[in-house]
Length: 585
Image: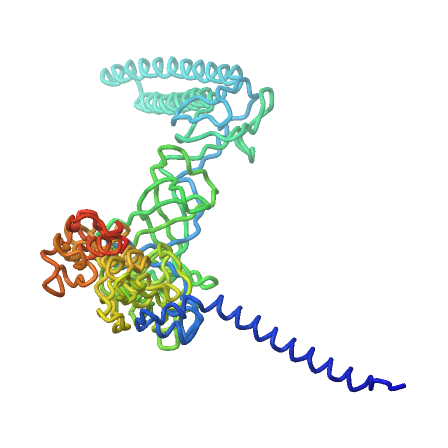
């Protein structure tokens, strides 16, 4: 009886199983690679420069060092008037404050105001029991009348003595004594009149009046209480609400600039803002500057005055004060988020819209506020700068704008037409997509022999160019590239000063227009290439105007591939200003 060698069979089974596992892993890896790189493999038939890079890298062309492009936010450098502000925390202080105290002591008999009421100067606020003061006045009047009667009698006697002295019937001493008595009584009457006036004044003080105009606070004394001039709290407190001041501190480094403006006679506008700095409580002007620096803080106290018509500023309220120190007219400004700081100084990332790349630009900053900053040199008006996503950028990095439509794979390429020709793809797409990040979309037509055409360099940015790219190479991403580039260069988001003419965008007015396809040549679309609004060979007749933007070659291509009727493309369906699709090749 023969036995099978079990160890050898078991070893053979393990070897076979291992080989099968290796083959399975290779197959799975190839399948995964095929799924992730099939767009790059297809890109080899069109062969743009960006397509070749995408086919080599397999990670989506266009990113920095082979990585994906970075999505960024952009803003325009525009020319505007830039106000220069000094922001500080201020305290509202009334221009005048008065504690209402009675000037005579007595029982509070009546209160004629409500708490929080706005009163005028001289208005009666309270009344003290006046009866004792009325009696005092009557006594003063009686004393004056008695002394006046004695004075009159002394004057009559003095007159008689002088008559007798003229007749030498009386001694001169008696005359002099009577004259002295008259003067004494005259002084007494004068004192009586003063006492009467004081009594009358005290009687008037029983009506407590507002010393200034303003807003009353809470009542400090109730009816029936004994009040007097020595009371600490008085009856009420009045604060003047209009005008009203805001005290704040200015850094000592800025005092010289403020003083120079004041010496020139300039009026410095001031605004009182709420805590969020979003709502203006009142507008006023700079009022006064203190005469010394606070050594503990290194600041100088200052004051701004406001009319406060809406009564929105209250005493002891904390507000944010904004003092306009100067106004720079015609400054080139960018958002504060666009300015970066490096070892070599300040710089910005400037966008190259057609290529979707950024470049580092050194700049010299000037004055600014919380949102904008002045660029004194290094940047021109109507250039675009990166405001978001700059932390992930380097010089020359590729970027994607929010308006771009992302594409996968390497650079897009044209697809083979029925006649065996291959259109070249647009160069440099978003994540390698043809014509999106690049402004080009208009690829060169393939050769008649079906050979791979030369790399298509990007043409000018604009929706019309993108439309031509779609017609020539049947690359559906071409028009999208024109759309994005046209919107980026002079599009509807650009400032008014950066929009050339009525067409507005360089992607529409200045972008190349496609040539109109000839009606008698069904192959005109595939042979013609739209370059600067003219046909590249004699088969395409005429050029669509730049404002129309549609490539007639695209229309001709549609007739050729679909076998349509003998209607020549006239560019009437073209893009205007960076957007409409020109044809679907």
